[in-house]
Image (cartoon, rainbow, N blue to C red):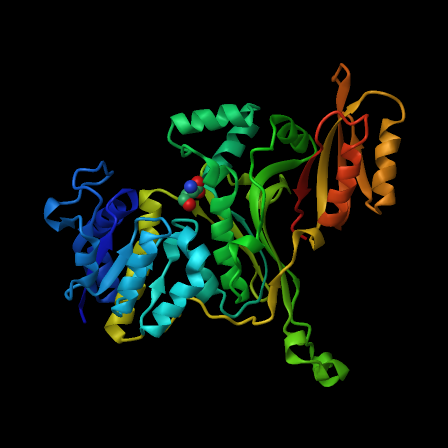
Length: 455
Ligand code: HSE
């Protein structure tokens, strides 16, 4: 097969971006892989909907079924988003044995396992490079580039909207609401912004990356998520004075892994059940995080995304780029088009299966058991004995304090009091803060932001 015929569903921002990128670089791609990808049909919502790149009328249809069922079309790209009709579209194509490319993170996060199983059942494949971090080839890197590594940790700035807002809050000293409103006016943030600013978009992406890294499918409900709405200009300022930058960070961190060392393999633990030896416990979470200014992720600003991956063989690696937008996303779709076209050419449908479970006994660690360091900001009455009362609660909870700051220049009834806490479980810190919040000297809800030192 020297030409693969592509049918696209979706001719909006991403769809027209893919069409344009193929016009621009389709020839180059064909010369590199030895197969031409030809766009046969594009299903659109309406012929005259606004789109960043023009699509010739002759190639458009409003009937997605006619695209999927066209016998001359070998390969389908689903670029409409959503989790209901998009799911039907993908399943219909897979049932016909046609490989599918999707950029749909919400759908994969919710129904990934079912879609991968369908691809396998119908002897075809599902490709999804564009679903996580747009132009950054992180899916391919985890599945192929790091196939020989155990992934000890993965840290991702995976939501461009949140990173843009936090960057501007830091640079301008402005509050969340002001920057969000401006970002919406300029088209950097959606209206309503909930999917992004409340962390759900990052949850979808981090779940997919965690699943690939650890070989068991991580469900959205297992991922602890906190968005950036509670982060204030004051937190960003005090964090800065302490040498930290606040980022919305997706964290996938192995807590316990394969313990079967050479000694263990010959000693008594060799008799333990294989499932016990294979237990893999992983933190999977999304929350605003203080990261040291000196860390490379602290310099990832505005709409850019970055993923920091620590493998046992490779060590630390970093991926940086645009996580969204018509061209960055099109770049990822073209990468999948090339893979799918090569698989069709050589009949290698499962050369790289979409997802290979390899940690049967893997589990996500509940947030209460996750150990972190913490930044805590309280608003307290400015009187003698207040610090002692609060320190006593931390002490009784066996939580160590690494530093305390009461910034100068705050006058009035209440003043800020900042604690940096040593490693402790989230459960212990949350309980202690509930007790602290009840003290009459504490004048507003405590703010707690976790600290990540990448150790
Ligand atoms: N809205 C996302 C972001 C891009 O701001 O990064 C699409 O996932």
